[in-house]
Image 1 (tube, rainbow, N blue to C red):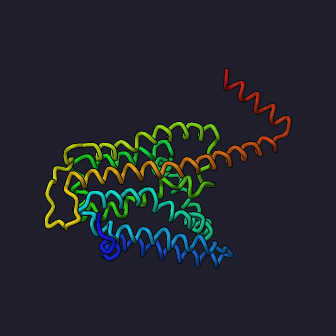
Image 2 (cartoon, rainbow, N blue to C red):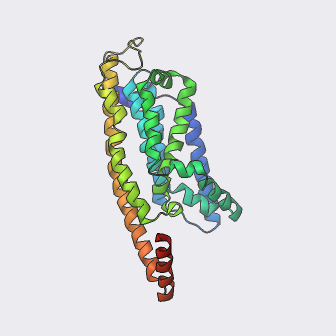
Image 3 (tube, rainbow, N blue to C red):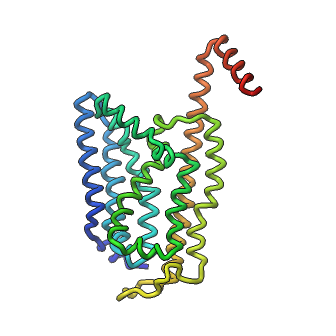
Length: 293
């Protein structure tokens, strides 16, 4: 493992990350200003969470040690990509950027935003039954020679730096902005079943990296490695450990959040039934029986 001094002092400028971080910071600031002009006061703690937790952690991953050593170390690259996908979007989401955009935009702008959120690609990525497959597809490339290309090619690195957090944001939208993704209790039951299956599925790439006895990307040498660098096989095993651990740990808070969403949905549906008159309830029951036949 690297010395603590190396971890703390390894920094670089990742221009793709800088563009993403700078653009996000400016857009959020403009949103705050526009929302304030419309009489909306965004909570201070959400603003601090967006800048310091969300963008701050994104900066550390891309410009700090994981970003500096990603081309040389498989485990550093795996740490960076997995956290960009699973953790950074949730931290950015604490700032409620979609809610801020709604408060800042004009009615026409809100309508465009609603159309974007309703797009099939966004809905697919935000579906708890489809989102894990996207992560599985991404991490499955780590089992192929493409793993080396993804780590070392500048264009691939820039695309991953920008694309992975955006994909993670779309996957996290149902949790971040629950009001835009309200679903029935029956749907949540299906999600629970799939998530428990996914607990096993998303560990597969990490397990294969950890247990495989050969270097899967076929790159067994590294130019001028430092003394603390692991050999190629051990590096791959460490990458498997990191991926396996993060994928399993991230699932636990997601399951807790799903329980919270299920509870809220159940209460919301119960209130909806309580508000119905006897005639409306009889009509609803009759319609249900007709559909059953």
